[in-house]
Image (tube, rainbow, N blue to C red; front, side, top):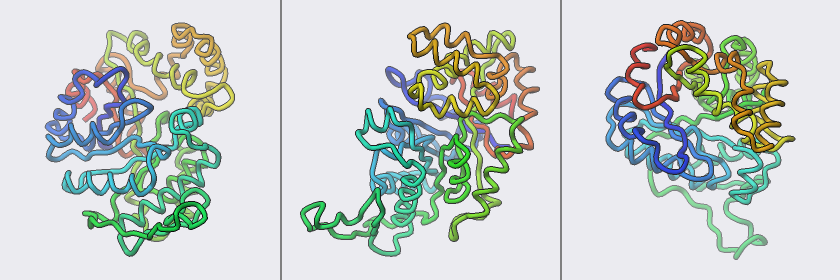
Length: 344
């Protein structure tokens, strides 16, 4: 199982120490470095800026939001970064949720799986560069039909020859259908809340997608599962878990509406439906401290590695042998080298 480093998305500004951690990941021989976006910083710019000083580590977006860019603009960014990095870029995509998609991007959210399928197909057409890119789906039409524009649209092919026509595309997914979709059309899956004890269930969902896997995609044997896992070193499990509880509370309680929170649904499938309901109630009432306090320690231990170095090393054993191919560490930049030594 490989190790990667996740810088996350920015809060009020650039995360302190992230640039140095990216260089450390390259120096320490980690497999990959990933960036994210929500509704502040974007995923591509930090990756290009920090990644420009690296030599070996792979560079990925976890994730670039589908609603943020057209498929062709996304493909342009991907093929550009792949050239600049010498073939080290991985395009990680995700649909986000209705609050961000409709509230920030002003795009309709319904039918996210169908939109993702269409989006990925167009990106792959751009990268293959076999001819002018055309699309006639319900979400994206290239060129735009005459009755929807000036009538002057022309089907175009990228002027740049992609470095890799099979540049890897990974999908962030939490729901069962979306996980299966990743196995069907993508080269990897980016889970946020992966619990080793449910490995058989996750493998089953991936197998459903593999049974329908599109021709021309990479072999199933090369499919990657890159799981984001918070890692916190502390004096004991409880105090270290306290650093993860606000993160879980944010996703379970604040990332989505009461009737539409896919993160809370994912945690409920892990067996924490009652806890998620309490977390969400506190969060929506504006009491973030009580929301964090309501996050059970066992939930944290299911999706994160917390405690003393010995605790973290022992907990990591459960991840080995799972479908996860890369453990994507989210940690304090100052602890990255020590964590790499513990898990490497």
